[in-house]
Image 1 (cartoon, rainbow, N blue to C red):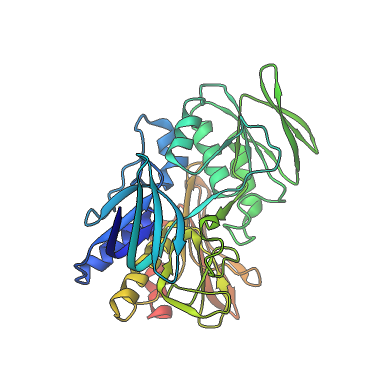
Image 2 (image 1 turned 120 degrees about the vertical axis):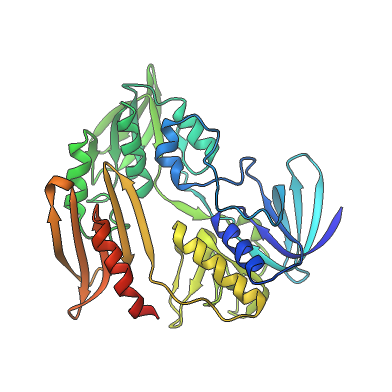
Length: 388
């Protein structure tokens, strides 16, 4: 079966929903089709590592989902960039070929799989993954989490709340190193350990093997016994289905500053776009980066919608990230570059609250809030003068 549409979106997350909502808001009236292989789509991913693990729902609701599209459940197995068409193997077994005047890739990223790791080790990305973990998180369960980044520490926090005995292992010297830009590592280490987590830093996982009563995680600091092991060591962009397409796929889909994909010679492909975790956008200075956060996915979706419509982009905004763990809501505005200076602006230990700026040449380039909503709201207001 063949079909022609206005916009074809591959991937059904928040980036896709933001794109569709902006297109419709700007008056786009042609057909939009979304293809996603996950049978639970649409749903909200951030709660998966947080409150979802303590609930009973099949998947978190997606209040942001734009219904003004057709959702096809299936996997894209072939693409013809020149003809702007894809081949879809639908989950019901049928094959569908779709041609779109514009194709927007929003396939996200998938978990890095450690070579040779035991097949019983869980990975964490989808609602199905979260349900598998939830079914095994009984009281006093021995949970080992590989990776002390944002997902790993959020999982540790949620598991502790459910009564699990948690060991968190990472090769890095501090937890949340990437998220916090290298700042406040000792503070994060303190709040994780105070919650009762066995935090093993500067530790390499050598193997994970079956044991009589679960799994044994062999590390450079000795073995750790576990009932459940979850790998959260990072992700890779989902681009394998685009191999041979002629697009530049170095660490995601390379794009210009408007989210238009480029080929191997750096030439824009006007009808191909990428948004969300899979997209590696270049900035006005030619610096390429791939952002893996909810807010950037939303913003990129809106931006590409305006590009497709031939409209001017929306106002620029500073990067924004957050995590909620161990009784702390951590929010970051801007980019805490490693060459900056961390300046403490406020601290209230009783509230587990603190507020910092990261400064360069005595000017703030980023703000870090820990349970400090008032201070962060003021920073958001004041930062608008930097972007607008």
